[in-house]
Length: 340
Length: 280
Figure 1: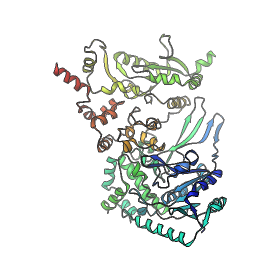
Figure 2 (figure 1 turned 135 degrees about the vertical axis):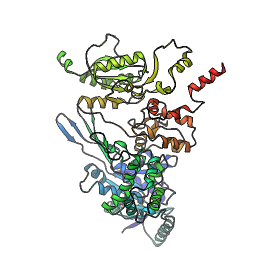
Figure 3 (figure 1 turned 120 degrees about the vertical axis):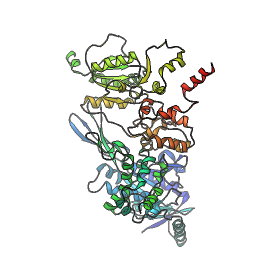
Figure 4 (figure 1 turned 45 degrees about the vertical axis):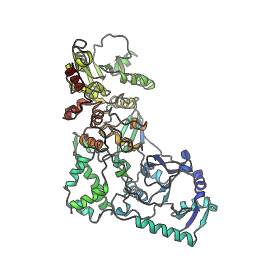
């Protein structure tokens, strides 16, 4: 694997080079200690928030848009909408978000490829960024602190320089567009990099025991925790919107007065009462507690069976977004304890 | 032309007691109005048509804004219902009772005395109620004022023989979709987002104002947890209760949450009047 270093003062220039070919998106401050992925073009490199822990919305917003038109229709019939995305580059994804992206990549490619998602995804370059956890991160619990590919370049902040791993041909190409800015890795760089990994590893300790979690949940589906959660949760859907791996959407028509219209898809949530409404006004999960339980079961039981891993990547967004202050880590630990 | 007009569905737009802001929103949507006029025959439009001959025939659809605040409103509404194949409540006054119903838990006699000091000004005044208290409502477009896009999409869906898109997710969901920062979490503000029907794309929050709940409650609002959340943020009970019920008191009263609306002395109008009475 190729590795390089880049001096911090050259990062702006490098991003400018990237900008010639890609719409570069970077994490920027949204105020109040929150961050958003936003266009570099609108903010300038000085807005790049390398210190960010998590963004309000995950990178999925670039691939599964909050609302999009999937086709249009009129008296003549249905007309497909071509997704003509210019190539873009997401700079600064943390390992948890790389894992999240991997999970939704799988969802939108098998068994049927989602063409809108795929055409955006194949137009995107991903640049990862090493991180240290804050009090809401629980990647070490979900084992997503590890970097297992899924990036074109990965940046480690070593202070005055970055240690950069190349993860793909496209990443290699990007480096070689500005090769003069990059330096070959020498022993000192390698040692600093290993030292950073060492320090990071010691900050990343599992917060709760999740061993056998899916078996425990499955064996005891009537655990009292779900009713308690049903009383505390507003079912507002905030957690699902900000979740990097929640992929549910609704499809509906926006009709114009002349009878033409757009078939739209919009983010949906299994916590919404209408999510499972079927003919005859029947609901499968009319109680909030059933809906909350279903969300956790999908992440921790169903997804494990289908894909051999939990669908939670421990990014901490849901905990940050929940108006009721529901904390996933404590939910998992209570489920683990009381269902045991 | 005449024959074509005759084939177009006949629509009446009526206003009961309210500020007429929803009719105004429709009047302001000029390009869409032209498109609408191409599809339907607007035979009654209280705010826009000055001639006051009564429409005698049958309507395919009546749009009614405002709440029912008097016997006259009620009679007019019942007449509209009899004359219309379908009836759509537009605006939160019509759908939920709106601001005029804020006092739904206080006897009208008492309100009359408090405001006019005698019962003669509006002898037939009633506590404000939504249309659904008296007639069958086929479609509802909430909001203060309505989102004009939502109304036009609903009309288009009905004209195309379908059902309007029904929204039952709260404002919080759209607020997160729009990547706004939560005002409860960041500024300790009372925000009705968790219990209020979305569809406004978190308009107020995007301008830095908390949600006032103008679109009314979702089907299954988590009132207790919402109230508890605000208390945990150290907000005064009276502020929380007032905010939650501001636009949709009748709905909350029906859900037996009236006890919460009676216990805040400094905020309850009727308590002020009682204090005044005992003072005189």
